[in-house]
Amino acid sequence: MYHQNTPTHETAFLNLTKAAEYLGISPNTLYIWRHRRQGPPSFRMGGRVMYRISALDDWVMAQEQADSRSNATLNPLSQKPMKRAVRTP
Image (tube, rainbow, N blue to C red; front, side, top):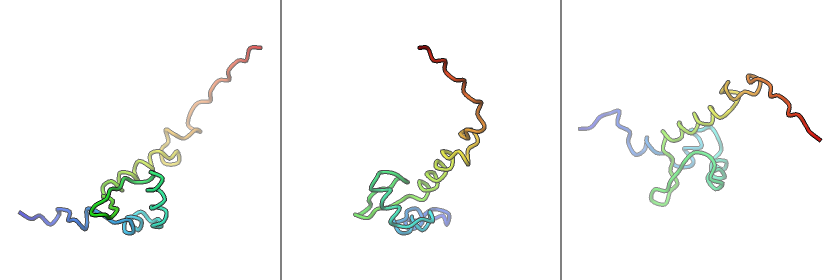
């Protein structure tokens, strides 16, 4: 039984160029992140580097949560000041 909402091969996975376009970055940036093992998870499918759209979305959400500007709990200005350690000679 075929459902129209079922993702197809083309909609579930993106190649490097289309993934970069999806993220709004250059393909070179995505290539460098992959080489450095940074950035969203990718895999090889038939010799081509592919990205799962859901993994791209999850990675973007994780980046947003790791940024103190987007996550108030990480903002250093929202935390109480630390007490100074007393030095002993």
